[in-house]
Image 1: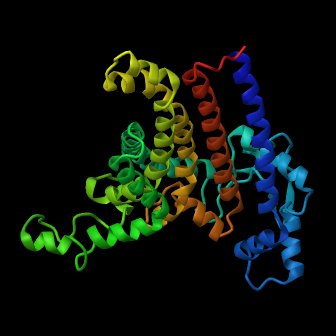
Image 2 (image 1 turned 30 degrees about the horizontal axis):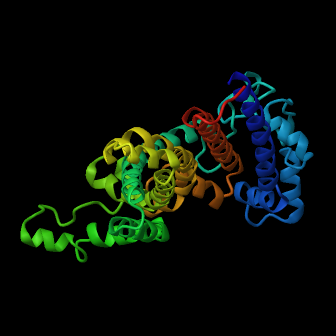
Image 3 (image 1 turned 180 degrees about the vertical axis):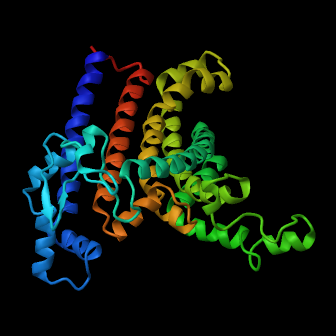
Length: 360
C-alpha cells in the first residue's frame, strides 16, 4: 500500500506540474499581458509604451524562466522602473532589502493581486473557506439523499418505485444549477410571485419571503434563510447523478449469484440488502461522490455569482474578468490540487472498499 500511495503521489505531482505550466502559459499570452499593462498603466498607451511596460517588469522573459520564478526554483531578477527597482517579490510599503530573491509557490508566495490589492494566498484562503462551508452543507444534503434514492430504486429494479425515483433523478440531472437557482428564487425568495406571498397572506410566515434571494450576508453569518437556496440549487443538480450511479450499482449487485444463493437459503430480504449487497453497491458511488468535490469547488461559479456569495467561484470570475493574472494562477493551482488529491483519495478508498483488489 505504501508503494501504491508513493506511485500515485508521484504521478499526481507530475500531473500538477504539467497542468500548472499549461495554465501559466495560457495566462501569460501576449494579449493578456497587453491588457494587464493597459489596466495597470493607461488604457491609451501606445504599442511601444505597452512593450516598454512589460519589459521593465519582466513579463517578456522566456516563459520557462518566468515559470521557474513563479514556482520559486529560480531567483527573481530586479528591474529598474524610473527611480524605483522592481522585482516579483516587491510589495507596497515593504523595503526592497526585506524581500527575498526567491518568492514563488514553493515559498508560499502566490503573488500580489492587482484587483484586490493584497496577497493572493490570503485572498484564496479567505474565499476558499467560504466555499468550503457551502460545499460541506451541499454534501450533507446531497449524498444521503442520493444514496437513499439510488438504493431504493436499485433494490427492486423495474418496479413502480424504481421508475418514479429514476425519473426524478433524470429530471434533476437535466436541470442545470443556474436554472433551479432562478426557479427557487422565484418560488421562495420573491415577495410578489411564488409561494411566499400566499403563505404570508395565510399567516404561515411572518416575513414576506421564506428565504433570501442573496447569500452575501452568509459570508459573515450563515443562517437558514440566506444559505438554503444556494445549497438546494447545487445539491439538487448533484443528487441525480449520484443516485443513478447508485441505482445501477445496486441493481447489478442484486442480480449477482451470491445474492440469489442467499435468497434460496431463506435469508430475509432486509439482511440481504444490509449485510451483503450494500457494501458492494457503494463501491462505484464512492468514486462518484469524491469526484463531486472538485466539481463543487469550480462548479459553484454560477451559483455563487447568482446569489452574490463571494467565495472561491466568485473570486475566479473576478480574476478572469479583470485579468488578474497572479490571482487567476493561484485559483487554478488550488483547483488542480483539489482535483488530484480527491482522485488520490478515491483510488485509495476504492482499494479498501473492493475486496477483489489487492495491492502488493
